[in-house]
Length: 359
View (cartoon, rainbow, N blue to C red):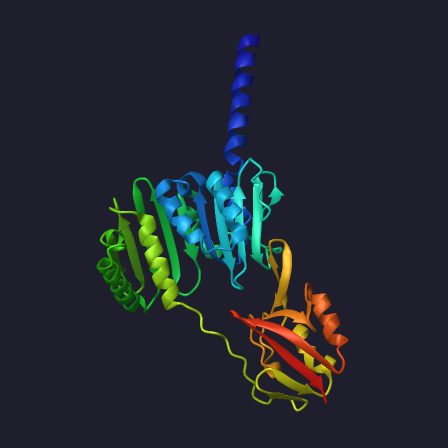
């Protein structure tokens, strides 16, 4: 009897342990739980998948264009169990790596045991949801939680992709109601150009484009692919950068909107009162900090301040030549400005000093 009871107890303990193991979040789920539900783009992958030579060669090409300080983040992702990258509507980037080891990377800080995080931009703030429970990711969630490599973009048009390195397979679905025919045509032209280039032809010859009525376009990579994927990726990246090379941003005077503000040359303003004229930068612009490698490098305006010619996404770098590291600091400097003051603003890749003088 005692032996039977002991056996039943052992079985019960095993069942409980199995149930606990089943309900414990996996490394991938812990990673996704750390990505805010307001993300616009999410990429997630197994460390084993991205460290595969075929994929790693492509990522090495792409990583060469990332900030130098992020190099060790990429190395940690290759060595980790899981890795993810998210981008929010303001362009802030969050990288997460799930690994039991200490990655020894200055850009990464430990968020919780086994989970490390790095940010470029404002960084993660409190959010009511993550991609694991936000309804916007419902369709993408099965792929984000299980595919060796998965990506989703909630921009317009929406896009969802999944891939695996061995055997090499991948697909990209683009949802664009009413625009699928035009997107299919554009993609077909790009693939045709790739087929004419020897460096990208091996990949282009394996791409298949299909359209579902006028709502969705699916691009599928049917391997195996002859040639080196990294070579094709490098050629495609160079071509993309040449077509997307940014044009220097311009600063022009706004249309007259406030009787107490006048402007000449786009960078010189005369105002009746500096504190009154500049208060809108904080009150209307709703600036948020940009964090790079743990340091605040400026404040990005969420809303345009039209009367001062400032646009949404302009970055306030300095006031009177002194770097701005918080919204409170910016508000204080502007409130105490007298006589004249300069603001250093970055718009895109262009920096300008705007001069404000009291009449």
